[in-house]
Image (cartoon, rainbow, N blue to C red; front, side, top):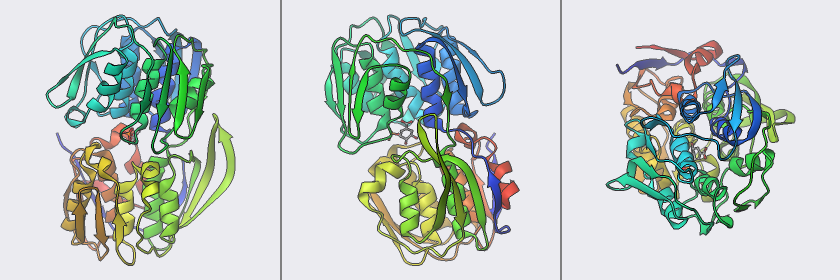
Length: 434
Ligand code: S3P
């Protein structure tokens, strides 16, 4: 059954919040811990549906994973050659990261696998990974148009490649590097624009000999991994909804504790500051090799900007939240060079534009972006198309609306941010089930 929320203007937002663990890091931590020799403990693991789906898949591939307490996983690694064939298809749920990274890994195994996903994931493009993996010698069949399910024929000897990414995608880079771990010779990946480097950092932390710098990674095949403990920082992408909410609701001040500030993730911080947001970083530290800090955000009047195109890959998941900030700013905001938003959990340019129009705003959409003309937000029912970040963004927009915003189809919020509504209402959001 589809669930809805009703969001409306609440109180000023206050409090100190602990945002759940990073989704990208949690997926990778389970994967590399499973492939390592020895036992690894993961702390701060995201208890979301996406990352749990990845953990379940590794259990089905023969890896023993314990959950001694919520947000902690103890993974008994089986070594790079220790995975076993699973009975039946492996369900990645809503997770593009799960499916694309697993495709690279499973293409290198001696057994066959089938990867499936939910309705949204079943519409997402997979040629971006099957293309380079095929060049390495992998055999993966897709549905017409390069869509899931992915039928992976194991037992193929892989060879390293020297590959330049066609789209800025950490998922594609990671799929190639995971296959490269098993390939004959060296795998080299070049990126026209650097993307999040968690795969590279984590391979190094698990003892692999990998060379990397922004835009490049080079890895020799045939290496083993050594168990290590991982501490997952709070997810910047989940924090983004509260950064925008406190910025647009007068009288607000929130502290978000120890948020991961990997520079390839924090484009929204730069964009919001260009818009005039008041966000300070305190208690800077390093956690599990990643920079973290408390983010203290206070309400501030925002002005529209032209979002610098160079920032796009560093804020690729934050555009739904940015659209809401833009809707509440003074003057239009222009987005360009963001065509990738059309192939996320939903077509995020279309769903955000349609939702803001429902609330009375003018949004001009272009193939790779658009212009948001701010104005007073009214009421209406928004279809979030089962997209977690669209649902949370309109819950935020509701906090500045003149009427009630009904946010439709919110169940997938649990894929990345279980407990969002409890945390949000605790901070002052007016948000309730419809
Ligand atoms: C992710 C990479 C990004 C991002 C996604 C998580 C990752 O996708 O949108 O939410 O963990 O590698 P792309 O690689 O498709 O840009």
